[in-house]
Length: 313
Ligand SMILES: [Zn+2]
Image 1 (cartoon, rainbow, N blue to C red):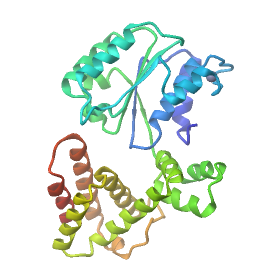
Image 2: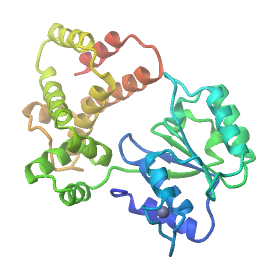
Image 3: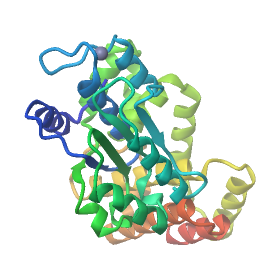
Image 4: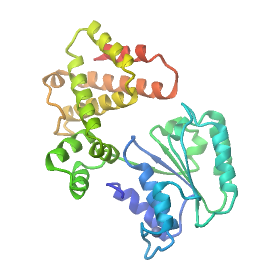
């Protein structure tokens, strides 16, 4: 089920109704917004074996196999390590070279498409230039600028935005989550339905997210040597740094939105945040964004990278 993203969904639905489906779509926006879910729902709409009146049934074998990602006409490609390699793109091309097994379209969902190395991107370009008939490709990414301009010019781009809190709350209510949990989950989800789902299934994860933000709020109030000790502890505990950095990012972005009047809700009330000038918040956000990107795409020294953020706080 798609939570939010109605504009994007209606656009896709219309393209199916008017038979103007593109061979390749670029879905871009932050992580956990539901880009892959929207792609899969669209594939169900196109391939459902019982489709009526431009909708899909969600119960036929095709719909269920797409949902579980086991349909023979659907593959999902993810980075192997830090990259998507040319061999994976060749696998995609081989897959597209055969006729569909049992549906109308053969579909590839390429996750974190920005992680294609340059060889892989050049190789993919051939597919985009001469798309096989009945092929459908989704490139999902947070960083479209990492893709070749020649790729960007050959795909239909659809941008995804955070979902209004009320829509996430409605979904949680419909799933019988208790009211107090709904509040906490929706506050910590920052408009990301994927996070809300994870939190509702995993209370430990929600608690951890809360703790990370509390820590972020405290760090700026302590002396630099203690901040470095905190970094050392984070590294030695081998915590998921990407998760931590993304939590910090959400927190400081929220603080900035609050400061410039775009939001009225602060997740953890914290007096120090109001003392931060806008330029400082922007600098912190830039710094975390940069480090987050480097950590996921290169072999940067994590300790040094986190220390750099500590100095910005
Ligand atoms: Zn169906």
